[in-house]
Image 1: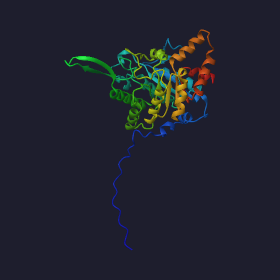
Image 2 (image 1 turned 180 degrees about the vertical axis):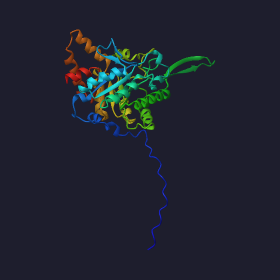
Image 3 (image 1 turned 45 degrees about the vertical axis):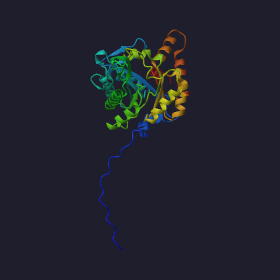
Image 4 (image 1 turned 90 degrees about the vertical axis):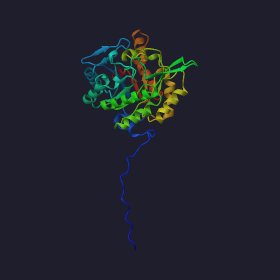
Length: 357
């Protein structure tokens, strides 16, 4: 018999390249809490609460927010102590927003990526260090950091007449610059210790951009919770006071969803799933329970609902005026969210719900 031929020398295989449009499943259940969120009737109801908090610069700061009674802005040290007490009551996760004054804002919102200027970054790092069992979601949007208070970067488009004079001018979203700013912010949040990135900006294709940016910087394991069906609602007023992020001109109806839309809201969530979103969100909550049910049924991805600041203020002031019983009303709203398909509920009532549940 003739000897077997000697195989040719092998060369190292090139690094495996994944398409950004091929979503991974592991980030969506890599943490113990996420495995509860992925499950039906598993864990305690308090596991499904996400507590939104506002971080500011300084030390020893606790600032009241007049339009959000009972809610405060915290510096990183007081925030950790506030959360430490709630963790003992069963708090599992927080959604962190950074709040800055006018001197830290710019046209491009670049201070969002600076640990010296964006207090959310330092707060998340300290939370990871001091409260390692707490799951941290980082809100990603440039509106608190831009001088105009909008969620993207704008550019001007002009048209000229036959004389070469400007005939019309439009201010439009610069998608490329906006996606770059959001991706950079997402990466810095992951570096600061965020377990999950939650983009709230509603820019087209930001989920794909953020997923790609995270992977390129070694954070492919970090999941993304998309504010996927976020409406241009009148219920955001108190939040804009809290975050100091009200638009300086116009409104956000050109990129947030029309309040009467249904198919568009579903298309937005389906698109974000295709781009790799691990979790979705419907915002606000109570006026959009029908959308919550539609998105939950159609996407097969865990869906959060955000009981926004206006909903919180409405219930709080109604109870103060004697129009309703606060505990019963809040518990009823929570039951409605869960019945409509919410796997997680983001609410400023979290501290109270930890006591009531």
